[in-house]
Length: 139
Image 1 (cartoon, rainbow, N blue to C red):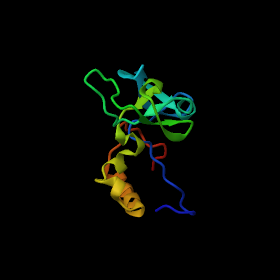
Image 2 (cartoon, rainbow, N blue to C red):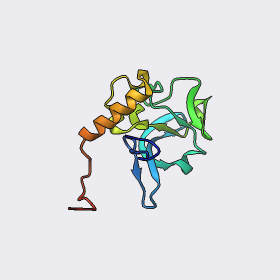
Image 3 (cartoon, helix red, strand yellow):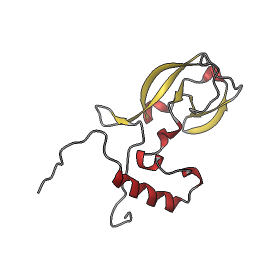
Image 4 (cartoon, rainbow, N blue to C red):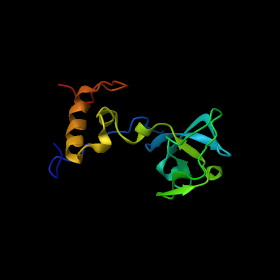
């Protein structure tokens, strides 16, 4: 249960990690002159602000060149359209904005918010952690 007396439970998104300073970073594919490379860099929210970051579902050709004349992207915490030559990075996956438990909910974008929250909370109990650790408090 979540509420004012219980608190909010947060989960990391699918590919997120924390760096040595404790900041959350997310992976992005490097884009050079409108061509998507296989090089992946992790960016924090502070580093991400000044970059033009395209969505992962942008249409590409066989060489990795962006085909669209205008590309939907994030820049300065706003969504906009820009030309492929201005794009610096591209998201790795469309699933990287949700947690592992939420990504298991089919058709999440068409689901009611409360239903998705309940489903995510129930699925989080069933999904094992990727890097298991000893509990900090034992009995």
